[in-house]
Image 1 (spheres, helix red, strand yellow):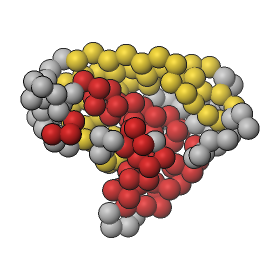
Image 2 (tube, rainbow, N blue to C red; image 1 turned 45 degrees about the horizontal axis):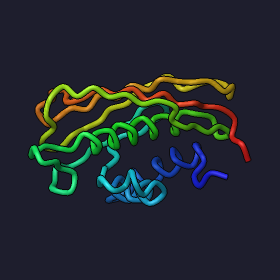
Image 3 (cartoon, rainbow, N blue to C red; image 1 turned 90 degrees about the vertical axis):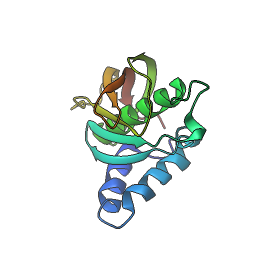
Length: 158
């Protein structure tokens, strides 16, 4: 059984976003459910079915030896964005798991990085793969990376 069902994610977001520090509380909660993802200290800025925007501050913990944000921290941020968009969009009796993931780096990532993910959520609960695109931008609006997560979405298996 999964710890957090898809409908719970969106309901929790919609409840918490209305209160002070609600976005931070939501992001902390997701980071506790998925501790590796939480290790980069992301913050959720926007969440609706099939759409998510998350950000990560630039700090020593996520940097590499080239004085920029580590490539795997960017992968982690992109995966969080794709996963939240996916979980907010699929039916409550569905589940998703990443089958493939690719990323292309286009510029050294420095400063706060924002990851935006969008996809058309399924209307049914038939098992199949969905590609979720993610664009990562720096504060200047420049694209630092683009990612594609292939999620296998289908009926929840109890």
